[in-house]
Image 1 (cartoon, rainbow, N blue to C red):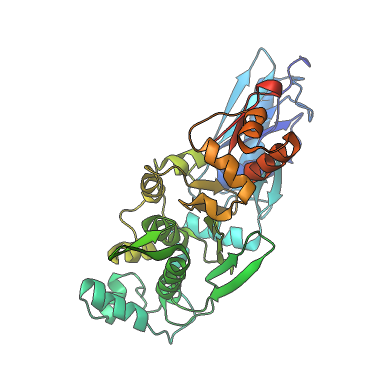
Image 2 (cartoon, rainbow, N blue to C red):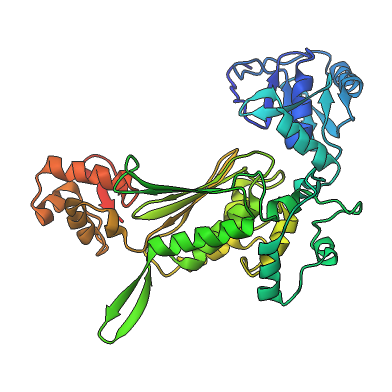
Length: 420
């Protein structure tokens, strides 16, 4: 049996025997996503099997029923050939699921206790509540920015009834966290903008937009973006505006960062402005129940802050719920550069490249890019002949272009080719 070697993952845990430590992983899967505990596999991933399979199944069930609260939904499957047992634990609705009064999660292939913020999120999820709905201790909130937006965009005067309609006042006539997030002045961090020069070590400007309504954060950030990535070109008697990055792509990315971010941690949305791109990073990974593939394909959407999303939709900051990724991709469809999306456990980044990549190219890099932009797949020898550079200079320049993600490489050795 030792010839078969398996590998632990975030959703697969190995156990040699029935020691109680597997119950931590049961808590983790019930809290954060369906997974499998496979009994009869050692720590190195080799199947060694176990005896008395039916009795072991009964022991596993008794341990879970006696130790996990509330009881999770699970299933046991026996593999008689390899003498192993698969314990399939399903993500539950009645979160959090505790083992010895503690809740757990998977961190890569390890199981660890959740921190206080994650525990609070689990409690809210188990109550089918959002962070926005939680009552805030603040009582004296003002909404002049929201009032002006309602009047201008919808033609509605702000009143207590409107605040209730928007979900910002609860049944006890108290403000909730959603109201605090939209209020003119609050204690929350917001958006940090960093403008870089020719490289990441050259910081030209740093702007913090915090302690104010997310509506103000959105408007100020958008104006700063336009100032840096739009300019007027005089062509004869005509003036036309040139946008180095599609305005609507940035608007969509910014709105989605504000809508989908976590607000229970005091962390800024970070916007990094480079000569050739903008990177918008929003705190908070994907909501539970959505995979990275589903997010990137725009197949499914799960709102983390539905009240805020509803208000942004009413003000036409977003077109439709859940279409942000698809819209951003579509806005770059006819361009020779494409957006990129990075999904991490605790953050999501959207990279919007400039339509004029040459802004960040050295003169040597421009010579190589001018050749490759014509559609060629060129070897280092080809590029040396075109540019007049020696081989070392070509390879050094290519390395810089590869680090900037402007070119790709195919083949190996003498068959190596470079292309856009």
